[in-house]
Length: 271
Ligand code: R5P
Image 1 (cartoon, rainbow, N blue to C red):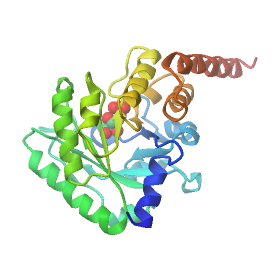
Image 2 (image 1 turned 180 degrees about the vertical axis):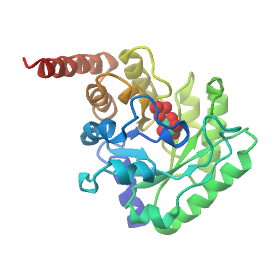
Image 3 (image 1 turned 90 degrees about the vertical axis):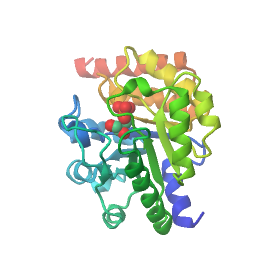
Image 4 (image 1 turned 135 degrees about the vertical axis):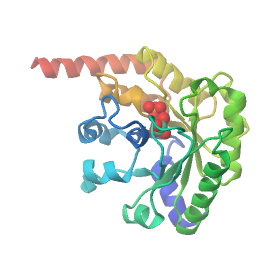
């Protein structure tokens, strides 16, 4: 691996722990003004100190993140469909490599829709991106998207998707956590991070999922809604960091979350 690629990989996966805390803010690229991400700057700014990398589109990056923040960015470069359109899987590349380089990204991210009508097109998009990534030393995050079909998220399907991403040269794969997740990680030669999916019922559910994913071979998270749709997003991300980078158990992370949440509430109340 050349210096640039190694350096960028180290901006995403911390070489000291071998783990990654990525926070995803890219939902608007097909969902529009997602709940709690209506004004991106307000949601993103408080989380920046705790995210190893942020994942978002160039529009939100330029409009809502200060370049002086020194945030490490994984740029979402696929899109072209929307939640109200006929088919979410009908994606193309939305951003040139030239612009990604101008934005000094740590990596670029693209969705693939395996088993969909646009399987071939999205996989070839990924392969094209990997070619360019190798040329310029920029890692590619391959995202195993399921569109509206959340029920697809089982070990058999996700193993297939992750392995295909890895075979096509993806440097990091982003997928969902599922039952028998160790089967997904065991058969994927590229490092895996998990998305959070729709907001879970309790914080403990989020910490359990994070812990289990790490125990079963994930290198970290690339999570969105379960962090910033929570009323205490900073407390949640700090608890997640403690699991990912410091190996805390879910219960310990939950205690940390409660402590931080109480401190925050006291500050707000002026106590
Ligand atoms: C899809 O919208 C994006 O790839 C998200 O970045 C991904 O789903 C992670 O966000 P969440 O944890 O909210 O699912």
